[in-house]
Length: 307
Image 1 (cartoon, rainbow, N blue to C red):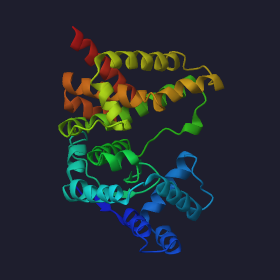
Image 2 (cartoon, one colour; image 1 turned 45 degrees about the horizontal axis):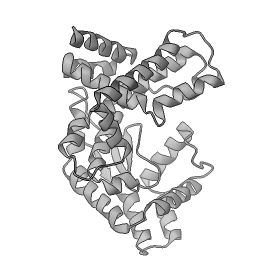
Image 3 (cartoon, one colour; image 1 turned 90 degrees about the horizontal axis):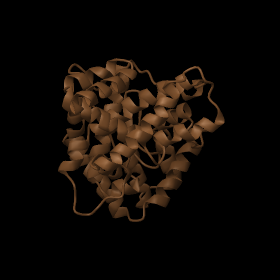
Image 4 (cartoon, rainbow, N blue to C red; image 1 turned 180 degrees about the vertical axis):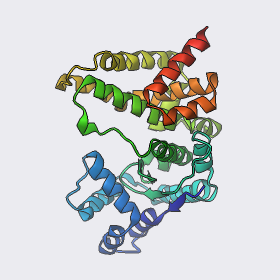
C-alpha cells in the first residue's frame, strides 16, 4: 500500500481564508501544486463545464466556489483534521478499497485533498473536495468518499486505464457499453464503503448524496423501483444496438447519473448481490472482464437467490 496523501491545496486555501497569505500568493503557489494539475487535466479531459482556457483561470474559479461554500472556517478546518487523522494517518480507506480489488493490486498514486472541484479519480491519482458542504457537516463521509475514489483508481488500473470516451457515442450500442462500464465502476465504488458508512451512522440525519444512496439501498421497495427504471433504460439501448443516438434519448442517459443516480445505487445493489451470492472472488474478478460481465453476474446471482 503506497498511497501518498497530499494536503497542499487544502492547507494553502485555509491559510488564505485565515488571511495568512494574499490572493496573489495563493494563486502563485497553487499554480505549481500537483493537485491543481490533476484537477485541470481532469476538467479538460471530461468537459466538466469549468473554465479551462488557463490553469490560473481554472484555479481562481475553484477559489470562488470554495469561498461561497465555506460558511464557517471551523467546519472546514474540522474536515481537514478529520481527513488527516482518519484517512491519511490511519490508511483505513486504502485498506478497505483493497478488499474489493485483486489480491496483487498495489496503489502507486496520490490522494489529493482539494477545494471547489468535487471528488474525482484521474489516472493513478484522485482528489477529495473538503469544501463540499456535506463533507464539512458529516466528516465521517470523507472516509467513505476516499474509499470510493481509491477504488476507482484501482478499478481503472485493472482495466489498463480504459475509460469509455463520451465523445465517441453514436449508437445505442455505444450508450449500452457506457452504462455497463459506469454501473460497474460506480456500483463497486459505492458498495465498497457501505459497511464503513453503516458502522459509523450518527444520530443526526445526513442529507448528503452519499447518505441518500445508502438510504435507498436499505429500502427494498424503493430499490425495486430504481432497478426497474434502470433496466428499462438499459434494455432500450442494449436491445437496439444499431439505432443512432438522437437528442431525445439524452434524458434517458441523464437519469443514470443525475438526480436518480441509477448506476450508483443499482450498481451498488448489483455488487452487493454478487458478493453475497457468488462470493467476493467473483465480484473482484469481474473488474478485469468487460463490464457486461458484471451485469450478467448480477442477473445470475439474482436468479440463484430467488430459487
